[in-house]
Length: 357
Image 1 (tube, rainbow, N blue to C red):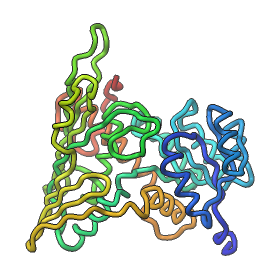
Image 2: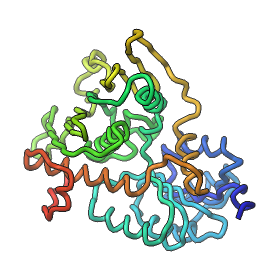
Image 3: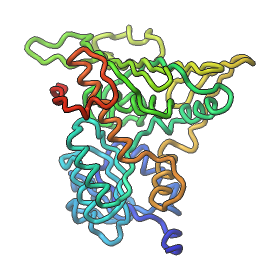
């Protein structure tokens, strides 16, 4: 057992794309003493062949073929493709740990079934909540634990530039085109809960259409916000929207910077994700441009490795993903009914709100 713990964790990668190329591939290469990619799968088989040739591993023609390989110890599910969450069920059947970068908050009923499957199988499951690992977030957590004291109020705004398959993953692009409530909404809910170290006790949400849709088209919200109240009277007020660069032209250049104000018991901070933080305490103003090393991918992969090896880890679990999905359910209900939703309302027999367009 001790000998196997010293061997690299053999990885099967499912879904090649932006997250793989810009976040995980370079990170796993740096962690060559802890990880080794042995097989890859993609819905475009030729892409898997090309990647496998570069990595010196095996392209798999099917999901079950990859997951059941004896030289695959853990599965990385990185890109939303035709298979959805099916690989998770296959990995549970094969008793293999799962790293999941797919958005999980869109279908609460499906996720509840998945949680039951994962917990019955006993496999390790780590969802990717990358904002927890941004350098600005980690530095803020240090300051809240020492100089600034507990956070009391977060006010912030996030903007999406849209879906860009080849952009560097970060707070301004989506992994896959989904409603704003899912991305960035669900991830910002998790980020706020991570800062306050507790889920919100109540939540309300609003959504609007800034640019009117074309005649006959469905209006999809391009601006959303939520207000969440946390234990002890703490609160968060967060908004997020899509940039309309084509329609706005030069006007988009003069919008104020997106970021997050954090008011704590002994000071305040301003964050521009992922790596800039300004903070104020009794001694004055401080500004830090934080190094991007270790990278976000390095932090995520390190925590997953620790989780699999049963070492100390602050990695989120599938229960964290379920908690966020329930909050998203409450967001949708608040939007459709125009009410403040209290914690636990999803268990009170309420019908699901209609799906977002």
